[in-house]
Amino acid sequence: MIRTNFNYTDSQLHRLKLLSEHTGLTTTELVRRAIDEYLNKEFAQLQVNYRIEIDLLTSSHLRKKLSDAEIEELATLSEERMRRGEFHSPSIEELAEKARAKVAA
Image 1 (tube, rainbow, N blue to C red):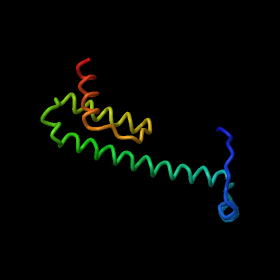
Image 2: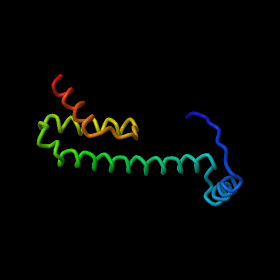
Image 3: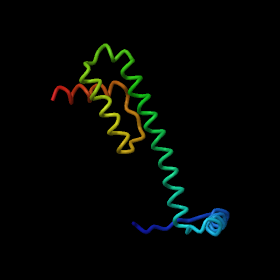
């Protein structure tokens, strides 16, 4: 594990200490769990967003212009972006060009 420092408001620290006393868990463990819960929720939403993106791509006008291999590559590119935690969304055209280039290579 890596040690870091956090700054809390008085209210946050007070509530953490109360919860720690109530649960028997350290404040550090409570913070770790809260961070995990938040990250899991955010990454789950990212996965939903990327699945929607893939569905839109495959059902859009591009479906008529792209081969099955290029559509599959679009899905792979989208999933890779999600795993890397990339939050920006390139345009459909940018993704299509990347997919075409990878399939052609």
